[in-house]
Length: 211
Image (cartoon, rainbow, N blue to C red):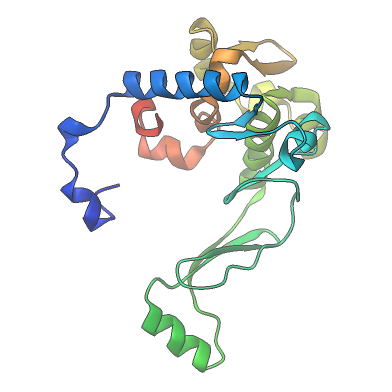
């Protein structure tokens, strides 16, 4: 993200591998880690079979928050220090980015927060969908429909159209009841989940941005 981080502007774009090469590297390393006895958790995460993340995944108790995969589902998180992000209830909060400002607010007995967002019902629904896919690589529509009182095919009609393209590409299987991510799609689970992220959709991010 060179527009946000000055040091990254020193990187020569010509030295950066293409999306295709980076995907080949990811596939190669995935094979090597699995051959060495590791279990693929998701995205770029691997763990030994007796690790708590692997156990939680087998028991369908795995959770993912903004910090990564976790065995602690849906709990409050308090961010400490500059730039840290916390989650309390239905809100996300980020602390100020400068140490002097952080120190000054703490010294006054104030919360060192500079921005936050209070999730609405649509945010919570999309978070639940993405969590199921990114943790378990499958989603049963009936579970979401029951939890949020919606008709999945109506609510996510445009998203399902986008997923049909991914189905043609062999990344997933889509039917009237569920989404099942195939082996090839697991390496690109972030891309699949992006379909349900309305904020990323507004930015029109491309596949290569996350590979």
